[in-house]
Each structure stands twice: as structure tokens, then as C-alpha cells.
Image 1 (tube, rainbow, N blue to C red):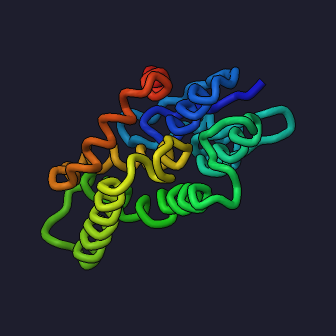
Image 2: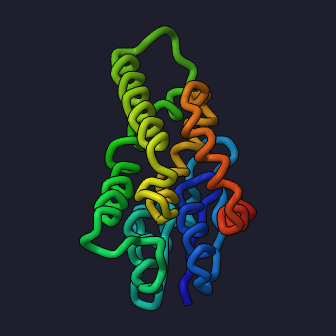
Image 3: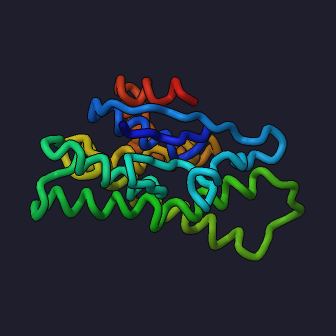
Length: 202
């Protein structure tokens, strides 16, 4: 049985969403952030040395990193259309955006989120650089979504699941006001029943 160690308000929602899209049976073990520090609890370290979520356990296999877990789950459902056929143009677009989520967008977006959680006086040395990176990334994404419905093309894929978490962070930070294509896209994917089911778990 697939078991997901899920942390509230974290990337592990991606994994629950994909599991629901694939209709794969799974168990969920919930872990809660410390209300004061917002850090993950020590209970996760008993599952994986990094003590971070998501963590997937399947028999002798234990994986962290949401992107790696998603690839593993897609391997369990080879007939799924959530990963385009290898070698096609759609597959390489899928691959690009799957990695863009954590390789390009996550660092400036999560850094902005963390900075918003602390008391700061005036601009700091990296503020301009981080703000520029967020703006460049969001403008590129918005232009892409003006040309195609989903990140791999005309069909919803796991790359869309990877990207959505960071759009939710951006929305929380008030960074999406001028990016109307991203806003419309986010509303559309959040209406998916599998997404709604994943969010019910926190």
C-alpha cells in the first residue's frame, strides 16, 4: 500500500492531488506544523532523515522530493495521460515545466514568502534581485498560458500539479494581480475534483 506522510500547507498536497487524479489507493499519515514556528514536527524525521514532507513509503521504497515522488507514482499508472508519451513535443514541454517549478520558480517565490513572515526594516541587499526573478518568471508563465491551455499543451498533466502549488504561494503574496492568464488558469485547475479532494486533507 502506498503511504503518504503529509504536512499541512506544504508541497505534499501535490502528491495527494496526483494520487487522486490517478485513482491510486493510498493511506495518509498527517503531520502538523508547529503553530508558533511553522516548522515541520520531529515525527517526520522518524520516517526520513530530512524530516521534510512529502514522503512516500511503498514497501521497501521510501522517497522524498515531490517531483521524484510524482514520477514514481506515474510509473505505477503507465496508461495515464498525465505524463505525455516520451519523445513527443508534449513530453519535453512537460519535462521542462516539471523541473521549472522547483528549479526556477520555487527559490524566489518561497524566499519572498519567508521574507514576508519576518519583521524587516527597509530593503535588504537581495530584495531587488528576488523581486526581479519573480517578475521575470511570472511574466514568462503568463505569456505561455496565453498561447496554450496547460503547460504541456492542450492536455492537463502532472506538470500542472507541480506548478500550481507555487501559484498559490504567489496569490497569497498578492503577486498575481497583473497576470490574468495565470489567474484564469489557477481557477480552472483548482476546480478539478481531484484537487478539491487533496485540499480537504489540509
